[in-house]
Length: 522
Image 1 (tube, helix red, strand yellow):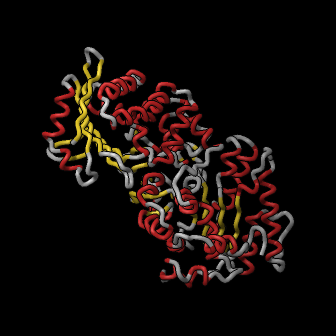
Image 2 (image 1 turned 135 degrees about the vertical axis):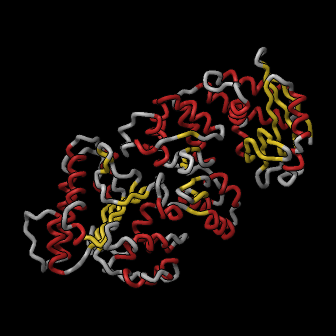
């Protein structure tokens, strides 16, 4: 057993000793790529989405220096026909690139990696004649030719160097050249049974090509057939909630909302486990360097990005083209680049069918609000701060206060939100009622009765508050809006959600620039 070769199964054993959600089906996907042209895999996902745990699981499964059968025989992978075929059958190379990225810039970081890796290989294969001048790939090739061993290579946080060093620096250029020499050489198919790289960012593009275009990439934008292994599914979280007595609806509100490929409902796994551990939901988002970067990206305000961020905070979605991003957090040149890097970082979710992104849940929304405040978007910050008072006024039936509160949000955001159509008014009201997300599920244009209610606020489980139905009108009057709620039979539709109802009619007069409001109990 060495530091970088045949490191054993201790890492995965620690995971199995605690609460473990079975993601071993990922191994089946990787097994199907072994000894094929698809053996080179780069699987990237957001921070706190289980990247390192998956790497340690693969290490435990493939590593020939240990016996991991007991760790896997009760998991999904055990039912795979190829379970026995690949279990503990390969010498495994394991690199965590964060171990080589220190606080100081080191231009010779790649030679250090090669030196340490080669030393471990030589120690593991003392009978194989290795020249002092041989590089790592030449060393591996000699080992394979002598022993017949094909290696499985795992690189965790593969992009740590890319995030730390700029393109054009010696360290970055050396790293890319080293990866190419390892995995694009003519002998790579002989040396490696499989390669699994994981990190946050997909492989950097040069012009339109990936630096390692022989890799099959799985990412937050395109997970292929790995989507269900990127996070927790709804059924998995529901089982955890039942086991530990945690409210599932609350977990769903805080941590659900990611669409990853065709998987419509993926939870942030780290946040779920933290919430289960302490017995309550709150934000567990890592806000150090990632937050600083996000605040910086948003502050660029490319092509009306500010408008889109506000619309997404109000529950809307934004068009995005992720194909032009060069997979480099320092190379940001457009709104699409900003939105795409936010998807990879987990601050936005991506619907590939519609090429839309959106804020997935309450936890991330809170971080986005922090980023908005960090950029001194005063008008937006003030609107969000006032939303608590607006909800209180609505529940109290204070029509004048509600009208003035909505009017203030409109005035504060008049440069970016307009009332040319009712959808714009709906966006303004969603922003105005942002605070209500704590206790309500907010539906925009909810199908109900004979038409569509513009906004419906449905109380979350264990919230003792009435449901609120808001009808929006422009250049009519508040009574007309209220009458439309009754005419379209909205109360009958939402009765299944809550017993008590508040019906709120809102009208905006374009000439006077004033709002009026009527509130009745349903």
